Image (tube, rainbow, N blue to C red; front, side):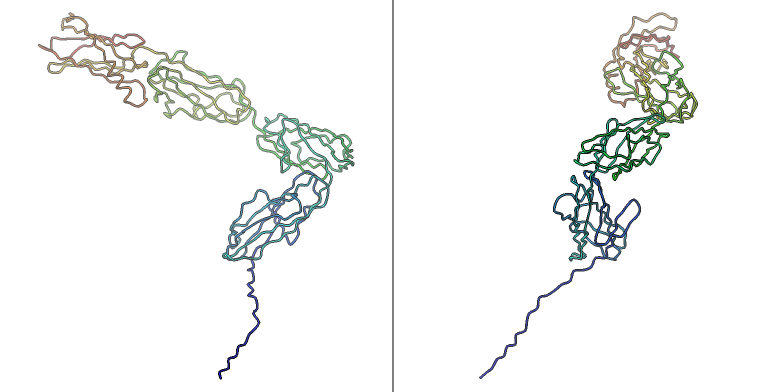
Length: 476
C-alpha cells in the first residue's frame, strides 16, 4: 500500500506597496513659496468674487514623476482647477521643472465650504503615493463692485483696466458698490495704494451698506509717464487690481517741404520735415515712400526710392523741444522720381509717439510726358547707318518713329521714313523686372551706294503723351 500525504498551507494575498514620490508641495504668492501640509485655507472670501490659489509641486528626487490625474472632489462646484496643464504631466527630477496648478474658489452664498484636491502620480510607470490636499474657504457677504466706461472689468482675477491714457491727461471711471443681501454689510476699509490713481472714498466710508443699497464713487487715472501702471483697490474684504497705461503726447502734424512744386520722371528731389510746434518728447519713427503707377501695363517702378539707402523706408528722429526732424540722421533726404507716371506718397509714422495725432500723407503726381532722351548718336558701318538712343518713356507706349536723312550738303534725301516699333517695346517691358521704362534702342538702315554721302538724320519719337524731335544727329 502506498500512502500519499498532502500538506495544505494558508494562502496569503500578495501585497505590493505603492512607491513614494519625492514631492514637496507649496502655495505660491508672487515669488514666495510656502510649504503646504494637508490643509490649505482660502480664509474669508467675498461672496461672488472668485479667488485663485497657486500651488507648486517640486520633485527633489532623481526619477521623473508623472501626474496621471488631477481632480477636485467637492459636494458642489465652488472649487475648480483652472489655468493648469492637462495630465499626463511629467515633473522633471532634481527640482528642474516643477508642476504648477491653480484652484479657484467662487461662492455666491455666504457659508463655509470644503473640498479636496487629489493628484494621482506614477513613477517609472508604477503607481506612487499621490497628493491629497484638503481645502477650506468661507464666503462672507460682500458688496458687488461694478465699473462704467471707459474702464472694463472686474475680470475673473479682479482686474479693472483704465486703458491707454495720454501722459499728463486723466481718465475718470465711475464705480458702484451694491448690497444684494437682506442684511447690511459693514465696509470698514477703502483704500488705494498709488497716487497715480486718485479717488475720494464713498460718502460715509467706512460705512454700513444697507440691504439693497448702492453707492457710487469715481477714480481718476493720471499717468505721469509713458509706461504701464497698476495699483490695488481695497474695499472691505475684497481687493481689485487697477491697471492703466500712459502714452506720450503726440507730435504735431509735420509740414513736408520739397525743393520744388513740380515733379517729372527722371528727377531727384529733396524733402525735409518740420514741426509747427516743438516736440513735447524725444521721438522717433518711420518715413515711408510708396508708389502707385498710373500705367496699367506695370505694377511698380523700383527706381522710385530714397537715394541714400535705395529703400522706401527710413527712420526719423526729433529731439525734445526741437521742430527740425532728422531723416536718416540728416536734415533732409533725396528721393528719385523713377521713370513711370503715377503718384508718390510719403507717410509719416511716429508709432506710439503719435497716438491721438493727425498725420495726413504728402502726395506728389508724376504726370505722363513725351519720351525723355538722355543720349542719342548716329554712326556708320559698311553699307549701314546706325541710330542709337538712350531714353525713357514714362507712359510705356513708345511705338511710332520718323527718320529724315540728309546728304553732306544738308539736302533732304527723300521724305521721312516712318516706322512703328510698338510690338517690340511692349515685349521688352513685359519681359523685364519693374525697374522703370529706360531703354537703349539701336535702329539700323541698310544703304545702297556710297554711305559717306549721308551726313545727318532727324529723329522723331512718339508716345501717347506726344512727340519729341531730337536735335539733328550727324554721321561721322
